[in-house]
Image (cartoon, rainbow, N blue to C red; front, top):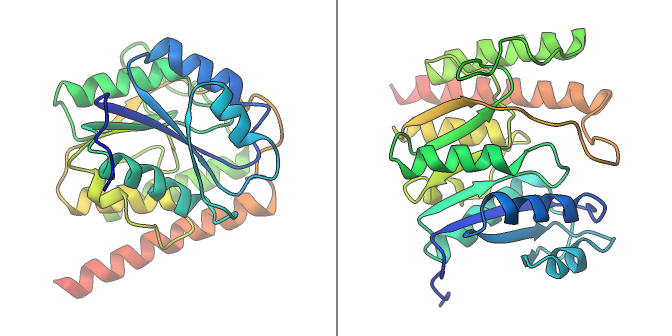
Length: 244
């Protein structure tokens, strides 16, 4: 049986071969959210990701092989569920998600303003200007398609469906701890949360460029991602219509 958590908040980081980026991410997390426990979900890294994480004070959950983001994300939420955390946050290992922004999201969840808060590059307000991010034409087209699909499935606007910057409370953990079945786990997470009637809030944030290394979502991979997300949304729409 799992030991209960000593802190009430877990922040987890899915990571695959991120030894160069992790030190800065972990140090920034400690500075922004010092009371939280930190878990690195090592998705079969072949570099020193696990060793670097431990050296910077993080717990490490090693998956043993490269199982993919959909497994790694669920594993982080499952750890939080099994260790009885009241709150859970997620940031990516590449340095794009500033921990001070995660602290804002966690504050909203702690204040019971929502059950799930998602950081968004594409909504404005609270000092965050509209159009502060200028994606390429191809990405703009993909984003427009995703927004239209999310509106149809969630029955509400949602600007940044692929964001991985999350803060959730314990109500959401059982939903998110189950391994995702699609190649678009963030989108599937939104569908699960909305389908369960939980309070979902999209919050404007600033995101940074990847600290080092190359994004895994460029060129043909980015195109496949858009197609996968659209497929996930279509499947959700069909499933909903069959349940009526």
